[in-house]
Length: 304
Image (cartoon, rainbow, N blue to C red; front, side):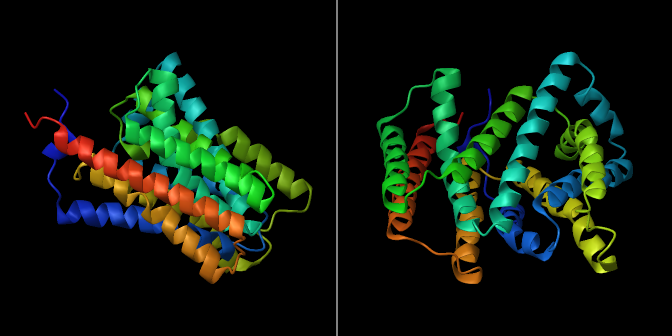
C-alpha cells in the first residue's frame, strides 16, 4: 500500500529543505535581473549548459552516472525524458522572458495557477472526479482569467503558458516513474538539450548577442551560477518530498509565487491595475479553497 500523506511525520529538516527550495525559486527574479545585459535567450541557453555541468560534477561525486544510463536506456524513457526536456526548457524560456521584460507579476500568477492545472489534468487525463470544493476552485480561477481579460485588457498568456508548461512537466515526470535521483533525471534532460545549447550559443555568437565572454569575469560567473541556481532547489525539493506530508509540501509551494509577487510589486515596482488585483484576489480565494479541501481530504485518509 502506498503511504498516505498523513503517515509521514513533519520533521524540522524536511521543513528546512522544503522552505529552502521554494525560497530559492521565489527569489529567482533577482538572479535574472543580475544577469543583465544578457538577452533572455542567452540566459536560457546558459542555464542548459551550466546545469548539465553542475549535474555532471554532482553525479561524479556521488558515483551515480549509471542512473543516467537507466533513464536513457529505453525508447519509452528517452521519449518521455525528451518531452520533459522540451516542457522545462519552454518553461525556462517563458519565465526568463517574463522577468527580463518587466512582467514578474504575471510570472507569479502562473505559479499561483499551477496547482489548479494539476487538478484539471487529473480530470482530463486520468478521469478523476472533482469534489465540490475543487469545482469551486476551478470556477474561481476561470472567473479570475475572465476578470483579467475584461478589467486589465489582455489575456494573461505568459501566466497560462507558464502554468501549463510546468504542470505538464510535472505530469510527464510522474508518469515516467523512474527510481533515479532528481540530479540524474535533470542531467538526462539537459543531455538531450545539448543540441539546443550548441545551436543557440552559435546563433548568439554569430549575431553579436553573446555577452558571456565580453562583459568581464563577474558577468561570466553570474551566468555560470545558473547551474547551481537550477540544481540546488531541485535537490532540496527532493529531500523535502521524502520527509514531509504531501499536503504540507503542497502548501509550501505557495511561498514561490508569493515571493515573486512581492518582488514584482515592491522591488521592481510593476503596476497593478484594478482588473489585475481582482484577478489575483480570485486566484488566491481559489487556492484557499483548494488547500482547505486538500487538507481535509488528507485527514480523512486511512492511516493503516
